[in-house]
Image 1 (tube, rainbow, N blue to C red):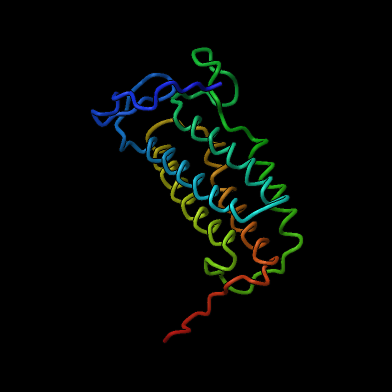
Image 2 (cartoon, rainbow, N blue to C red):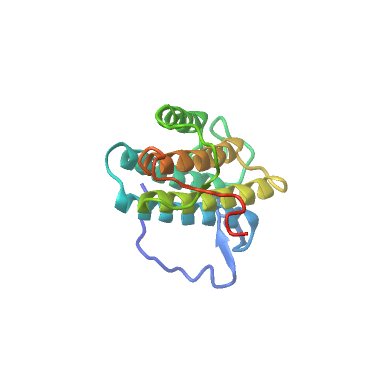
Length: 192
């Protein structure tokens, strides 16, 4: 359990932040940018949840918890991802079953949606609009994570989770737009 007695520590006043293993990196490092962007997406999902209930809200609640796991994963350096690391047996990593759960939920939701004949513009209901915003922020987190992974070891399942999550948010947005009936469709060249 995490216990926070004091919110400010002044340790970041020099432009660095601490990772889970105690090492310090610049606040603008790709790893920090990636987990900071995950936090941003989580906040937007929190806004979407102001407009959801039932199954949609339950899915988003699980996703918000997963995003904290994901942030912890991205904030933990190391190269061991599928078994406990001897040096960090407590390290929290995204695992394949979390990605698989997203895939199962996407498939279940998609069964009730009409196929798309056009791209969708962000909009429709308030919940769907926030999910479209969250989806774009998740895509940014994915870009940052894959860029960071080109320079240092990152858990591949963390990247898989980000990729699947953006799809999940897109499909859930359609569900929350009256199963796609209220989707705002792109009309190519409409304003020429």
